[in-house]
Image 1: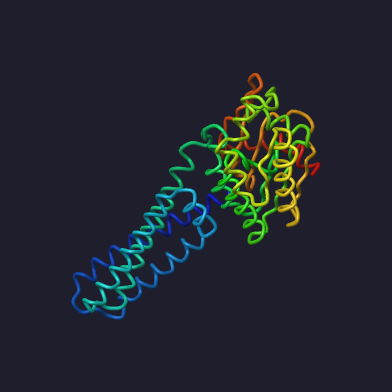
Image 2: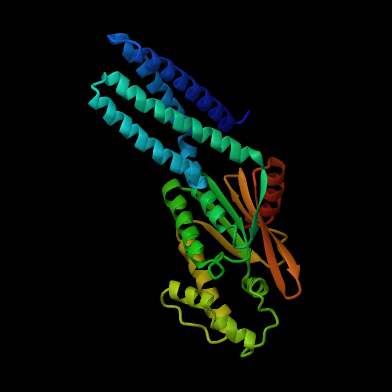
Length: 327
């Protein structure tokens, strides 16, 4: 049985025992007019159980809160309720042990909800459809924010979604830098070489076969999306041609991303010259987001998925290792 699973079961057991002891003890206190020293024993026990549960789950709590906003809201309200109970208990001049008991009880309930929510959402389906690129970016960012040891990437370019989803590209870069700097996560990233990357992006943006100065070219260069892209990255001049967009603007952003992360010790290699069957983000070898390029005439769309299935993770790792080992 995996260590993470054992931790989960131990945390669940600790949480359940803590809740049961707290409920029985609070019931006993509400029916006792003269508190004694023995009242502090259950408080100490539940405090220890709460601490055990938190320690066991600490490396996952932040990730769950980011991954599932519902848990964050529940936690916020639980803190408000705990503070309210504390104030009310003080006003009613209840014993200190009982005040602490109420606060710990609410905290244990929150941990229990967190565990159940995580178990429900992460085991309900091991593989899920995320939508078409770049609809996968919000989930990708949340997964990256929970990385602990390694991130392995296989994509067409380093400036992943820099044009298609500019705001989320910036969030992704910040998340990657934070994990690298604060958690010492090892990042390995392989992409197409310059020529192959240009070909891929042109098809993705429906520009393959578009003639310079044509109506389609002018619409692309003058679009709101292009304006957002240029305004976001200071120092970029609006491209006058599609060729200039690729060779100056987009390639510049690609190299800037490579240098930005490469300077932090990451392996960033534009080495792929053949067609990639999949684009892969593999996090901690336990979860992957992958894109399947669907080729149409002069256009490529990417359907994206997230998986925790061990067999599929093994296959994705095998595909990625063909390139990551060369980085």
